[in-house]
Structure formats: structure tokens, C-alpha cells
Length: 179
View 1 (cartoon, rainbow, N blue to C red):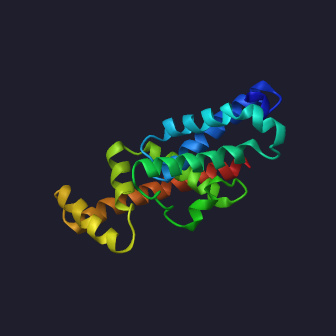
View 2: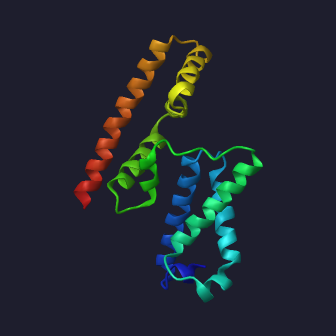
View 3: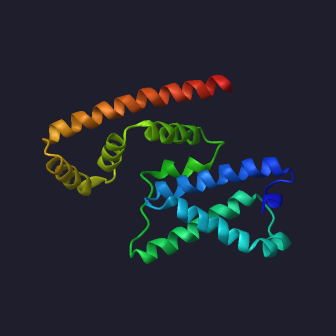
């Protein structure tokens, strides 16, 4: 498989690691709890078809991996009897396109979220998990579970969001200065 990704074995290893990381992110953005296992399943399926692929597939191997990942996602959602969670908005679709500036924004967001405490990360992701009518009900339930008033919950989320915004701006500033 590494030879299919790149002729230089070391470069192929780096490409493989980045590809696996991006597939895991794809599953996480779609709300999958066991993203690492699903990413491994995706890679195993591609590896099993590799001999057949070499004969006819033309194009970026990464695109083929992403196509298989989408199939794995659909299978997983059928197993759970759920429709796959839609992206938060249409801009999330650009997440895997490095030519789009949003790619770097989502990379920075992912990095900064991982640096939050587990409680803060869970709180902010849970707070923004729903839209429209479901959002209102969900946030009321969150406040009740946490034994907070809705206003206190909003303030807590606002502080986390402001902290994230500052961290993201720092990360983006560092990345832009390297370019």
C-alpha cells in the first residue's frame, strides 16, 4: 500500500499518517464515537482491494480512501439505525480541501479543542450540537443537568468560546507566518 501512496517509502509513511489523521477527523465531524476503529476499517478495505485498484484506478489515492470512508460511514449509520449526522454547516464540506482557507481554520479549531480540558471540550461541543428548535430544548436540558441557570450556561460557554477564539487566532497567526 505504501508504494501506491508514494514511491519513496518515507514519504509514503508520512502520507499514510496524514491520510489516517484526516479520515479520523472526518468520522469525528460526522459524530462517530469510535473514529479510530472506523478509520482502520477504511484503510483495511482499501488495502484488500489494492491489487485490483492498481489495474484501473487513476487519480489521487487519498480520494479513493475518502470515498471508502463515506461508505463505511453509511454502513455504520445503518447499523446504529441512524441517519449520519449532517455537518454543522455547508462550510464543513471544505474541511478536507487544503486549497480552501477554511481547511486551516478547522485544523486550528481541532487543535485548540484538543487542548481544552475534557469537561470544557464536552460542554462546548454539546452546546453547539443542535440547531433550531432542538437547540433550545437541548440547552435547557443541559442547564438542568448541570444544575445551572440558562444564563450561567451561556456565560460559561461564552468564556470557553472566547478562549478558543484567541487560541485559534494564535495558531492561525503562527501558520501564516510560516507560509
